[in-house]
Amino acid sequence: MRVIVVGAGVVGTMHAWHAVNRGHEVVQIERESEARGASLRNFGQIWVSGRAGGEELQTALRARELWESLGERVPGLGFRACGSLTVVRTEREAAVAEAAVARPDAAARGYKLLTAGEARAINPALRGDFTAALWCERDAAVEPRTAQLALKQELLASGRYTYLGGREVREAVGTASVRDDHGDVHTGDAVVLATGAWLGGLVRELAGPDLPVRRVRLQMMQTEPLGEPLTTSVADADSFRYYPAYRGGALDALNTGQAQTPTAAEHRMQLLMVQRRDGGLTIGDTHEYEHPFSFDTVEEPYEHLTAVVESFLGRPLPRIRRRWAGVYAQCTDTTRVVHRQEVRDGIWLVTGPGGRGMTCSPAIAETTANELGW
Image 1 (cartoon, rainbow, N blue to C red):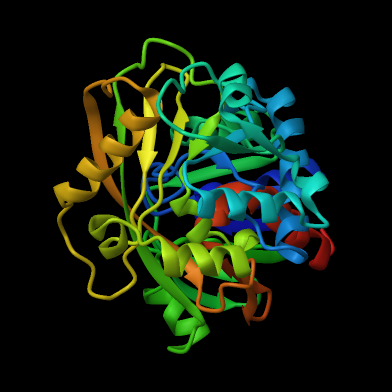
Image 2: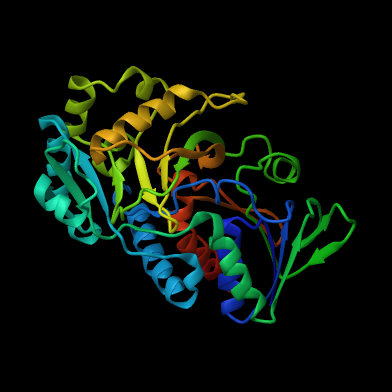
């Protein structure tokens, strides 16, 4: 079988990975020389903790297994089973964490409610003021800026994989066949369009104007090395407001009785923080849903994030080294893990995982491979 994958972000690369590892030939086409979108501009978190129960959680747990096995095979991914701590300070925040621990699927997530002292024993860098923390043992992390490149090198070594960068696919010309902007036609047994937040052009032509996927913009930053290990990912209680696992009466009480800061509310913010292999901290993020998006980054969210992080660490944040914005594609029905649609004979569009793309991509691609009979 010959598979054409359009898009070299994490979703596309995972489709290429499954196809090659099932013995098939793959041609992967990317409009940039290398992917530069949301797959690189994220935390690199394998985030099980906040996923909705049911299909979304099962997809995340399966993806977590696949990421771990990939990490053993491809050390360049930087996979580490670091877990996460969601730090809480108030009674209302603690009540949401307690409700999470009481979920029937809490054991599958590795949930445990820790005292501040127990949390510091796991992550000594958290010297600031907090009362408790929700531990999620199943959360993990990889290096987002290099993961696709590491996977690509392993794919190239297979002898069944061709990478074509700097080519934009412009036209569907038949069953499982597309033409790029160099005029070359690529024909296979299946074409997967994993184009991320690029939803115009050929995607709009094939899927139509009513594609149930929207674009979301975020702002993030990265610091100089912290100078000590941050042994877990870290989140604040605003993340409870964002992730579906925490919905219920306790979260309703938090939302009505404890408002976010004006900046966090305006920019739909949560704190997520992961340490990179060089010691720097990736910190975010904001969420912007209304089009057209701003073309600039604004400073107030960075000031808010800096203050929150410093309050948890009990020390000044290292110098900010990078600031950036990114855009990802999210299903408008946010209960859906991904939008998977045959848009032309033999041509499948796979898009819209939203903020769960890095987490779930191995399992999303596995499901595509299974459904298409690869």
